[in-house]
Image (cartoon, rainbow, N blue to C red; front, top):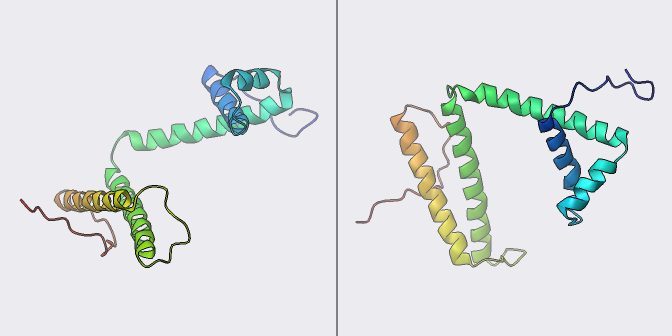
Length: 158
């Protein structure tokens, strides 16, 4: 442990870790819209204690990412990934549907930047994708849990 802090010393730092630490550091500067050259120069001249902090964060981020990648590498839990994808999709579609309904009722407290027709089309595509996921889950015998009732069932009109 170092004398100034009670943190254990850093392990040898790989190039990957250094790059991630610099990117984490650069996020703060990027908000000011500094160029990448300025960010890199700031990183190179940052005090050691600042660099150590970002390196520790980078080590944690990379360890977590590596663990997640290892857990998903075998593909055995694709059913759970499908359930999560479906849940996220239907939640987003529900929020978009609610927003469009509030717009139609004149209750929306802001003016959308993009045309309502485009947002309506996006919702239609999201509903069609949800239907595809439901059909695929049915074929692959994957339970998607509680399915949202308000996702429309797209029918072939040909």
